Structure formats: structure tokens, C-alpha cells
Image (cartoon, rainbow, N blue to C red; front, side, top):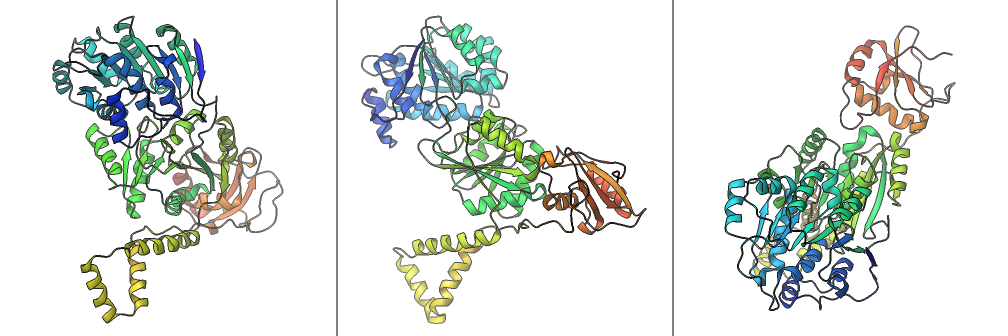
Length: 550
């Protein structure tokens, strides 16, 4: 296998692309090729199998569209009448498949290309009719493509090329058998183009089995972080997670935001909280139908929604234009998930921000996660309401100044009537009030405060001690090793156990656990509530225990 490392400093153009594709690229405003796009157009890549690793958002769809052109177009740049497909593109999710179909449709538009899609959740009968009419390229998800092949509705015998897009994600989702079934059904002489953000051993093994003399293209160094993404780690108290989500969204004010939760229930709950506070938000999770998912994506793309709350599986392969922020409301499970989530922003040369909410007790876990991902993050507290109001003041002034530019005659007439009734200061204040009212209110987040009282005998804080027989003792499964700290423990216990701070007595923080007193009058209620954690703190266990030894 040959290895090629691209030179990011060299000028990159589309001069080597077929004329019809250059016209389409120019019409879409493409002037400079990305490193991966330039690499597949070079003479050494022509007609060869390709094993490509490139960052998410690096223009891979256009890249393999350019690579496919040599296998699809004749010497005059034509495709010929549609019949059995000449190229097959396999993607991990239906959303990505539909995006790829749309991308290839405009790229090959001047060639009268017919691009068919076969994805789960869509009407298979309509797909069968589309295949019967003939297609130059078929784009689909592994399961649905195999289903059409096994039913004799998709003929792969004339394929000149197969593309596996986001191959690492397809293996993560358990599609190995389906991929092997499709590759085995394709002609042995076809080209195999394998595109993947990472190259784990499973991908390398797949490439060795199904590729011939592949050209290895790497457009970024191994484990190199995404240069267009700014990472921020926001240290929060567990009970203030939702308030922190609100304030991060308000302070950064992104053109579009994708908020990740660990579970479907977490998605539903956070979505409801954001909508209640006035955010235009949609959801993406595995339980939604294809029509519901499509409507959510359309709302994001046309600006009717600015926030999408999603699970990891639902957001795989998404390409949402103008996505300025990825917000991890729940910590990713591993470094690869962190990279995949974060890679939804900072795409195609645009800058993006990745914010990670880190509960105090999970700081060490987050630090290890960032280290494994080779990511350096700026640590901070969540934005305060005062900081947001100050940033709003600057934005409101800029927005009103923009509104004042080039007014229409009708607007000037209304303005004159207003000035006849009100002073200029009153008119300006009213405009500021209207602009401020378009934004959800920021949340008040409690500042870090020192614990009350002195030090406890085991290194923990001392709180007011109830009289003997008036308290019950409990333990929680986080201690000094997990950064247990009274400044978040007290409000956490109040929220988790539905009690007040006055009903909490002594707190003894040990290495691996924390023991604490609860007023005996509310102990039973606390115990019942504490047994039902939500998605914010499901990893913290609480149970009754004896009083700590003196």
C-alpha cells in the first residue's frame, strides 16, 4: 500500500476535475479544494482503490464524488442512460445518505446524473420503483441496501466503484456483516474507496481484505485535534446542569447548536426545559420516525430552530450547515465519541466551539477523556447572568444599528410619528427592550461559596449538628477521589432528595465516599427520592448507612 501525506501549504484548485464538475463547484462557490479533495484528484490516485482518513467536515463527499468521476464519466464527460448502478455509496445513517444524495446530485447535475437512495425508514416500494427506472449512483444504509440485493431489486453486477463513507462508524454500529455482503456481491474488479475519520484495526483489516494496491491518503496527522474547533470545559455543580446549558447557549449565542445527551429520556427532558424557556429547539433520537427526523433537520437548516438536542446514535453522520456550537450536556463515553460529537462543528473551513459540561465530581474523568482525545480545553465556570446581560447589551446595540441602515420610506414615516410622540431616548429604549425580549432569559447560577463551619475530623466540612436521635445517616458513592466538595454536594442533595439545606447536618468526605446527616423527620422522604436518580446524576448512588465512627 502506498502512503500519501497531503501538503496543507500547497495551493489547491479544481483544475484537474472534469469540466462539468468544475462548473458545478463554481456555481456552489467552491474556489479552493480541501486537502482531501486535492489528494483524490492527483494523477497517482486515478483509477486506484483509496483508503482515506480525514477529519469530519473536511469535504469528503465532494472528494469521493471527484474520485468517482473517472469511473463514471466517458471521455466526453457524459454518463450515458441510467441502468444498473455504476457506483454504490454506503453510509451509516439515513440522514447522511440523504445528504450525500443531494450533494452528488448537484455535483453531477450537468451530467444528467440520476442518484437513487435506499435508506431505512423510507418506503421500500418507492425505492424499488426508482431502482427499476435505472440509476447511475445508489446511496444507502447497509441494512436497506442488503435487503434490496437479497430481494433481487438492486443489481450490483455493473458496479465500477464502491464507497464506504464513515466506515468506522458503520463498524461501531455493528454493520460488518452487511458491508461484507455488499462488497462480496460487487464485481471483483471494481474500485473500493474507503473513507474514515479514524483507522482502527477493524478498518485496516477490512481494507486488506477488499482493497487492491490501495493508495493511503492521510490529510491530518495521527490523533491531531481539529484545528477549527475551540474546546471549552465548563465546571458545574451537578444540580445546575440545565441552567448551565441555558447560559452557555445564551452567552455563546451560536447560529446553530447541537446539544448531546446520553439517553433518550435525557433528550426529551432537556428539550422540554429549553422550549419552556423560549428556545427554538428540536430533538433527534432513535425513537423518532423518519418523517419526524426529517422535519427536525429541515427546521435546523432553514433557521426555524437553532438548537437540536440529540443522542449519539441519532446524530451520527449529520452535516448541519452553520452549526457553531456542539455542547456536551452529558460527558461522552470515550475519546472517539468526543471526537465524533465535536466534529459536527468546525466543518468546511468554518470555526466552531465545543463546550463540555463537567460536574465537579467528574473532573478527573473529563481530564482523562480530553487527554486521550489529545484535546486542550479552556476551563471555566459557567457564564453568569450578569455576563450574559453584558454580552446582550453589545449585541442589541449592533442589531439596532443594523436595523437602522437603509430604512424604507414606510419605516421612516413610522419613525417620524414615533418621534412626534416620544423622545429619541424613549424610542431607543423601546427598540432595545424589543430586541432583548427576543432572547430567553439567562439563569442565575449560584457562585462558588466556601462551606459553613470548620473542618470535620476526616477532612470534610462541619455543618450544624442535630441533637442525638434527630438524624439519619446516608452515604453517596463519591468522595475526595471524585472531587466531592460541599459547594455542590449540598445543592445536589437538596435537588436529589427534595429537601432543604437546613435539613442537612454534618458531611464527612472520605476518599471514595461521602457520608452525611439528614433530619430524621424527612429521612424517609429523602431516601425514597434519592433512589430515583435522573440523567444528570445516574452514576451517583445514595443509600442509608451507620453514623461514621468517631
